Image (tube, rainbow, N blue to C red; front, top):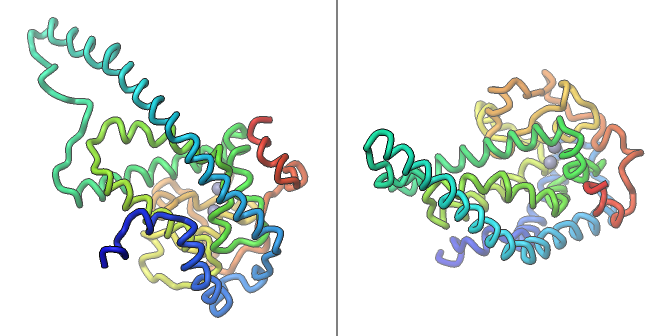
Amino acid sequence: MEAFLNLDLLSNPWLAILFLGPVFYFLEKKFPYNKKNQNRKLADTIEDLSWQLGDNLYSFLWFPFYQILTVTILKFYMDHIHYPLAGTLRNRFDYDLGQFEFIKIHMSNVYVQFIVLLLLTDFLRFVYHYLAHVYGRIWKFHALHHSPTVVDWLTTSRVHFLESLLGFFYMTPVLFFFDIKPEVMAWIAVLELHMNLFVHSNINIELGFLKYVINNPKAHHWHHSSKNELEHGQNFSSIFIFWDFLFKTYYMPAQEEAPEQYGLANADVFPQNIFKRIFYPLT
Ligand SMILES: [Zn+2]
Ligand SMILES: [Zn+2]
């Protein structure tokens, strides 16, 4: 039980690929959502796994720098903004604001922490994802994830490591302002990884009313459609799908049939060579 709940193991994408991959593979063969979407090429599998490896190596190299950067920014904020501002207000109102630690939001109940941070980080991901589809500059980081023409559980791995770096930046404010237990962030990471595998899988699953709450393969497969059904695309959610309902970016045909085609609408401008793909966001 102890080992089963080990967060390091549960949040390890390689263990998920190794142990859950065969389960997804079987379910995709047995209950496919899109029957025309079952012929993954070996070259694509090798490329997906390479991006997964690249992401892990890169995070490993980048993380110490990220920690130094975070501490530096936090120190700058405390020295030049937080304390001077508290001091100014104190002088003006003769009121000691310094006694309130208003930089950190404390939530003593760990379950409340989990729910609040899950909603907040999921919303930030939704906003980032929408912006990645609207602005060409960010799209260049995200285009790789939309390049496969066969979408299944392993498409989860196809994310540019520079896009993961953007994630560090927009998640940082959350870490600044909340007093978070590390296990809470780890549980969120575990949930994100497994939801990601689930929504990319080509499994025909009927969730009933939960399809209005939780992201699911049908919704995310429509996100990967090569055709935009709405102005900038559709279904940008990660874990909870209600963000798309709330911001009117949800799309699903009446019969819930699968998209005709996946991939990039303008695939010809996206490099075919993996090495050129690495530098594409910087061009
Ligand atoms: Zn996208
Ligand atoms: Zn996706």
